[in-house]
Length: 414
Ligand SMILES: [Zn+2]
Image (cartoon, rainbow, N blue to C red; front, side, top):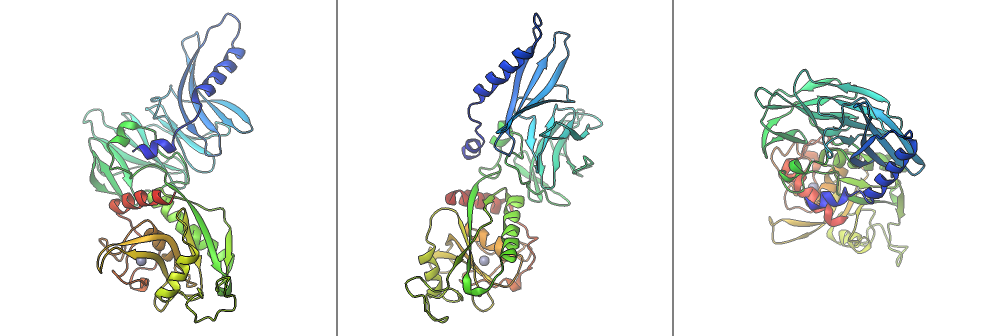
């Protein structure tokens, strides 16, 4: 789990605390001694930090405070909590300026710019812990029954309305797609899946839980730089390409926590190579139709870059195919293939193609369980893609093994 920890390192935390402490001292009344206890610090998702701390008054009462440090300065506010749960389990980041906090008796959603509370929720009994923020500013938490010791996962929607899962376990760990883990093994299947949010800190930084997880399955990383091209002669419009690219990015972020970092640019690539600008549409070095191994070889020649992820939109990838990802065959069929970080996508607007080809870039093969419903549905061994035999929708499943393998492989393209 060292990769996850590295990406979550907060630099110069002690300097920040020194600064906060100085500010507090300036504000303190002469002769009055208050106490200051730093707690957790997480990124705010906008280049700043959320620093939690407790301000103890001489009267014995305390305030549960947050200082948000951003490039434009510091903002400070108090949240209606009874202290912090634990120095490393109190805060997670949602989407669009929303964060979540807990003191282990309640959880609340707040605007990280102002501290305004959007909702709070307290279970009927027993302590609550946050598991992860979810897409659309929901939160998954767990609630322990102090009599039985069993934990039950509870989903809070964007309004804080709770829905308990129908099963309990001595140690609910987390959700992976539409599957849940308890004490390191699969214990249940939820009614609907849990989608990762667009957030760089969606889970509590809880080393005890992370250490018990399958290696590499969690954490809002890796982050892979995405590069998008269109073949000039294919006549594709930027809005259509943008929609298709974002569908692929959303899929991998929500289902696996893999971030595809794209600046929105679509570079124009001529069908002919620069050395032969007058090439014919049927020539092997024309990539308007990438329908044979020679044309694939030309794509490889132009895009043999070892970092990031590359999507090249063109007119056609051959009869019956909707997309293709460059690969080497490790051995004779059906030996596994090693894929490259370059996919060619054709002009048919099929939702599943971009997420599927990116799956190949993350070294996923065809042929997992429940193939029609799985993202990697497709034939084995052939170089082309024949997705029409599979469900064309992008609402596809990944297994925990696929998520784990994809995350590990995606790190190679960082
Ligand atoms: Zn495929």
